[in-house]
Amino acid sequence: MARSFQALDLLDVDALLSEEERLVRDTVRAFVSDKVLPIINGHFRAGTFPTDLVPAMAEMGLFGSTLHGYGCAGLNNVAYGLIMQELERGDSGLRSFVSVQGALCMYPIHAFGSEAQKDRWLPPMARGEAIGCFGLTEPDAGSDPGRMRTHAARHGDGYILNGAKAWITSGSIADVAVVWARCDDGVIRGFLVERGTRGFTTRDHQGKFSLRASVTSELIFQDCVIPGSSLLPGTTGLKSALMCLNQARYGIAWGGVGSAMAVYDEALAYAKERIVFGKPVAAFQLQQEKLVWMASEITKGQLLSLRLGRLKDEGKATAVRVSLAKRNNVWVARESARLAREILGANGIADEYQTGRHFCNIEAVYTYEGTHDIHTLIVGESLTGLSAFS
Image 1 (cartoon, rainbow, N blue to C red):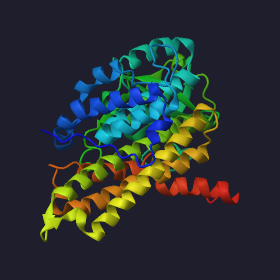
Image 2: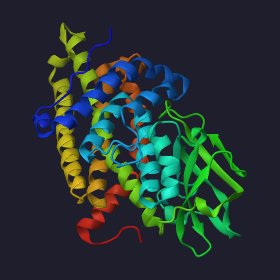
Image 3: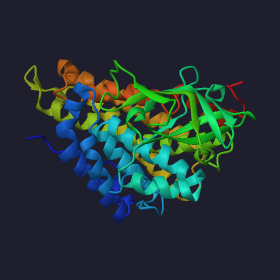
């Protein structure tokens, strides 16, 4: 029988949460422990996404959970962050799926779409009956999306799309793609492209050692004709896409805490049980230092995420504040995975334990939705008033 998860809470952060926030967290925590952890390693090995979990996640209201109306839960941002924390405690790929569905697909439809687009897509997406993906990154334009080559040429009442997107979560299983393209006037706009549209094809990225329990695809548009009604009318340049990214980055900041909590919990339990030189590994000073570092940084990350969530609910979560949290908490998760792997010794590379899976996954999370270096420069520009991007 699997050992139960022991949550780290050195500063009684739990007391700072509302009853509803704790209920949401505990519900998702139980779901992850009971339904995700028993199967996720098999999916990681096979390189498959656990689609069987989608209906249960929809029933819990995890898709577009901060949105109001259209069958969405209308939770506050702290509750949403706690959902992301617990899902990433299970697996980064699962958190990525929910994050993309809500923050990168449902959010732009809700924020920038027409009423017809909202009615068409948001209710089935909230129910998990329609899956979305977000096409911004290109093979030659990752950290610099302003260089995108995907083009939307006006064609009668519609558009012709040409270009490609890379590293797209849920790309080949999505029913609709939120695609960003440069129009004839040079302005970047968002479009909804449905699966099966002529000229739109996908292929999955193969050979991943990270996010293996997640579908990651390339989107290809070759003379893809879409109607004018596919345009998200409220999109007005790259800033619209970046607003979506900030929604996702916020959730990732919480997710990083969840990943770190998972490996810390496993490393602590292992260190107390593993006997070396006649005593538990946890009795050695060097190993205690590693555990204390993890516990200290996780606690800081919990407080940072919570404060950011409160600011977001007040409409004060600026892009710089989100970058600070994403940068810090994912770095903490990356370092915690490394230290936990050290404590587990050779067992740290065996998938009988979850640390190795988190170790691999966090490398992708460290890079996507803005690399660690890019977030450093965003915060650096805020501090100095000088941009390092130009």
